[in-house]
Figure (cartoon, helix red, strand yellow):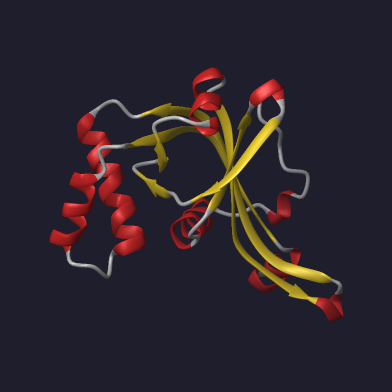
Amino acid sequence: MFRKMIREKQLMSADAIAAVLAGATSGVLACSGDGDYPYAVPLSYVHFNGKIYFHSAKGGHKIDAIKKHPRVSFAVIGEDTVVGAAYTSFFRSVIAFGQARIVQDEAERLAAFRALAEKYSGDQPEASREKVIARCTQADIIAIDLEHITGKQAAGYVREQR
């Protein structure tokens, strides 16, 4: 069902994919929006327990799109360094496909909120993070249950690795 990448030599390993997902701070969620127009929205996320999680208001375009068509893709650019003199860029990116869902299980919801807080506010005291999480009653946690994930890197990185 999912296509093979044409430039297989540029395919990243599972460890490299995990590193990009851990290190990047934003990604773009793509889903089918109103009138079947593609809807892509940048957001903060965490890759945790083999899923991608993000928080959201309980309503709006993103939630409506997910409820109507839960199949989504999620793209992350971990690096993009332009090398003008060589007419190229050195990049690493990841694209994931899966089913998005609003997390209903309270234990999973709290674990995902904690993982998000650790990623983005890990320099803050744990007690402070827990207070903020406890106040986040107006936000949903969305999980993307991953079905397929690939990473691609610049050909220059492949040459360097040989």
